[in-house]
Image (cartoon, helix red, strand yellow):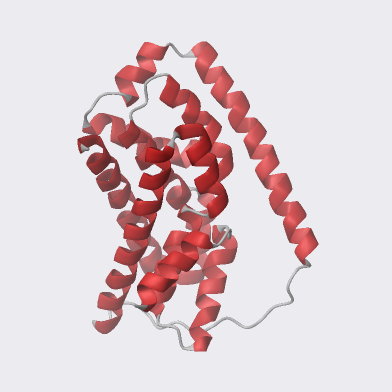
Amino acid sequence: VAIFIAAVIGLLSPLPTYIAVPLGISLLATGLPFSAVAAFMVSSPLMNPGIFYLTWAQLGADIALARVISAFALSVGAGFLARFFMRKSLLPSFAAPEPKDARPLWNEFKKSLLFLGRYFVMALLLGAAVKALVPAEVISRILGARASTSLIVAVAMGVPFYSCGGAAIPLVQVLSEMGMNKGAVLAFFIAGPSTKLETMYVYKSILGFKIFILYFVFMIAGAFLGGFLLLRL
C-alpha cells in the first residue's frame, strides 16, 4: 500500500529531481521503506499537476492521460523492484542525510521560475527553428513510422533536448504537428526527465553508481515499453 500511496504523492508534488531525491531519502528517517521512497522518487520528476494541465492543453487528453498512467505504472514497478532487491540484499542500506539549512522559499521559487522561463523560451525558439528548417516529411519519416526506429530516436532525443517538463512541451507540440507519432511522444516524455544530466547527477551522487545504473536501465526500458504499447492502441 505504501508504494501506491507514495507513487500518487509523487504525481501530485511539483518537485524537481534535485529536491525529490534528497527529500525521499530524508523520509527514510520516518520509517518509510525504501520501496515507497523509490516509487516517490520515480513518479515525482515524471508528472505533476502543472505538467498534466500543459500537456492536456497543448497535446491533448490522450497524451496527458498516457503520461499519468505510464508515470504511475513505472513508479509502482520501481517500488516493487526496489523491495525485491532490498529483500535479496542486493542494494545498500540508506541513512537519512544530515539536515542542512534550507534556502528561503522565495529564493527557491525565483530560481525555479528563472530556470523554467529560460528553457521555455529556448524550447520555443528551437521548435520554431525545427519547423522552419526541417522538412515535415523528414520528421514524419523518422518519428512518425510505426516502428521501433521512432522510439529509439525519441529516447535518444531526451538527453540533449529535454530541459524541464513545461519547457519541453512546445518543442514536442511542433514535432507532433510535423508527424511525430504518439508512441514517440510518450517515449520522449519518459526518457527525457530520466536521462537529463541533472537527474543522472543527483542519482549518482546521492544513491550511488549501482542504483543509478538500475534506475537508468529501468527508465529507458520503460520509455520503450510505454511508447510501444501506445503505438499498438
